Each structure stands twice: as structure tokens, then as C-alpha cells.
Image (cartoon, rainbow, N blue to C red; front, top):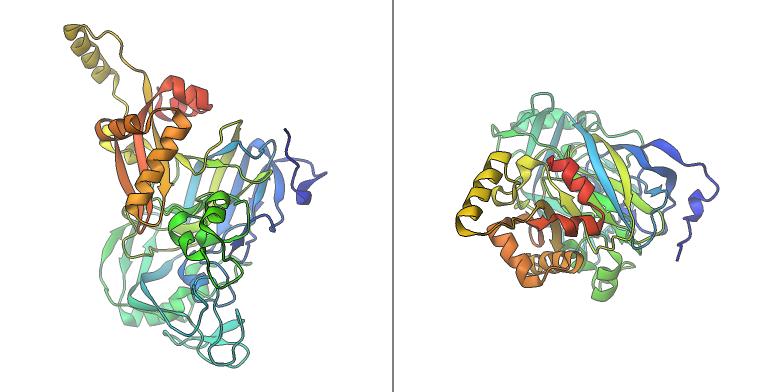
Length: 443
């Protein structure tokens, strides 16, 4: 059965190339009009502002990120999937700031990412402005009171060298200097509405050099109901369950709606292919929350959020019904046990089989399922269950494959993981992604 096109694109001529530089103010879902439509096989280019800390300290935001307006993809129907092939990614910020967060009680209803208010005048989601430098710099436009619902328990300011892919945390003196030109140093896009986190100028650990390896922390397709953009996942999303604000919902409603676009998975970077579920007509592809770097787990709760540019091409995968993302990682990002064998290794395997009379040797390729849940154990079970449901392999066979020919890796605490294993090629072909796996890994 055909699903209707989004009203916002009915009658519009599809385009092969589309640039998006407008944002949704923290909310994603069916209420957001879609841009496009973009042709199947078309190119999408975005310029995105930082995620997390900037929107977090901007009380008018009702989500923790500032992602792009969604784009409709021609032919994408509910029950399909859309492959996003990331061809280019570039950091444009000169500096950013991040760290471990704490909350200011009395300035939010249930969830400081979603439902902030001014504790002095009572204004909900107040407009605000920046006065001076430091943790009390965010001020309510209505009454002038300090209104930020977040604090750093430990924070840092870091300057970036995207050309050479290195970075360095700086002293308080330099952090204060950067704060005086915060929007420019953050390279905030013209239509971004967040305050720059550089204004807080928290510099607790100067002199730490770090590699850069940019990736997108929030990228995917529109959920089936309106959600705060940072809560389009099970671990952050759990705070919407029975929440005392307009986005409160049941656990069942959350899991039916979300598309797990907020993954904070550091291998969602230039060169990878991300395959996303379609839960609304047209898919509604969006992206944001670029990070300059992050190890596995985002242990601090936040990483180095930056402005950046991303270019990708889209491909509709018909009749591939999935609950959450599938990732074809770059070869270097694959866990060692899930890397395809070289021709020389294959010859050695054939010789080993011949010695024992095992002539059948499986043709397979790597695949990664994203799992999410309230904690890492639940997320792992979710990733394994998703893999079994989509591939048709038994749950226990997926466990075996992930053990001897794969791996479980943390993407984010408290509950996002990667389940990677070598999967039989006939199964990948049946799913409609065999050609992508062969192309990606030169099989």
C-alpha cells in the first residue's frame, strides 16, 4: 500500500542536489514541514551548528540539539529504509567548549534539556541573551535574571586545527579571550539560534592535546511523533516516559516513534554508510550534533560539539523494515574480528578446510546494528534482538557470530551500543543491502 507524500512537498519537482541551512529549534517529528523532495540517489549538503551545550544553555530550546530541517526522499515509504552515504565532513568551528554537566534545580520541569523556565519571573522557555563571561552569563530577556539550567562540574575550552586534525585545551586567560568573540569562534551558522558555549569559558584542564576525528552524533530519519531531537533514542528518551511536560509519553509510544538518530557513534563519519528506518512518508532525513572527536562511550556525557559541513548521497532500500540504524563502518573502524579476510587469508582458510574435509566456506560481510536502551545491558540485548529479527538468524547464532567474528562496542553511556558481526552474503542480499556491503568492502 502506498503511503501519502508529506503535504509540504506535494506538487514540488524533485531535485538532485539540495543544501539545507535551516534548523528545527530542538524538535523533530511529523509537525516539521519537509524540504525537497530530494531524488533517490541525490546529494544532500548541510551546514550544522553545535549540538548539546549551546542549545542546553539556551532556555528557549526544547531539545538538546539544533538539527537541520527534515528532507523528503522520493520513493521513501513507511517500512522502507534509507541509506545515507557520507562523502564529506568538515569542522568549521575554530574553538569549542565541553565537559561534565550538572543541573541547576528549580529551573526546569522534569528534564532540563526539554522544559526550562526562569526561576525569577516564571517565564517558560524564555528568550535570553549573553551578558559578560562565565556561568552566570545567560540572562532572561524578560527580567534579566541569570537563567542557565546547566553548570560544568568539570569543563574545558579547546582550540581546533581541522586541517591537521589536532586540537589543544587552553588556559583560563585564553578561554576568556575566546568568549569575547564566541559566535565567530564557534562559526555559528547565520540562522542558528543557540548561544555559544564558549561564553561560559570554563577551563579546568589546559594543555591537553587531542586528535581530531569528526563525526555526526545525531543523524537519521524523522520519528513517528514529535520528540526533542536529543531524545530520539532509548537512553535519553527514557526521560520522556511519564514526563511532566508536553512530550511526556509511555514507554511503548516512545519505542514505536523513535528512529534512534541520536547515536553519538564515533564511526558515523566520512566514508561510512548509515541505513535508517523510514517511519513517516518521505523519511525526513535530518542531521546535526557534529563532534570534533570522541572515544567509545562518550564517557563524560558530552564531547566537543562543533559547527560543520556534511555532504552525503541517499539511496532508498525498499521493504527493509528496521527499528533502528544499521551501520556499514569504514574498514579501519571495524572491530578486528569483524574485518573481511584478505585474499591471502582466504587462501589459507581454504587450505585449512581442505585438510579437514570442510569444503563449504561461507561468503560474508560485516554489518553493524545499533542497539539502545536504558543501560548498556538492555542496549546490547536490543542490538542483538534487532540483528536477529532483520537477518532471520537466531538470537543465539547472532551472539556466537558477534563473539568469534564480531564485537560489542559502546557508543554512548548510559545505553547505546554497536553489535557488529560477519553476516552471510545471501542474507545481506535478501535485505537489499548486499550491493552496498560489496561496494563498501570491495568483496
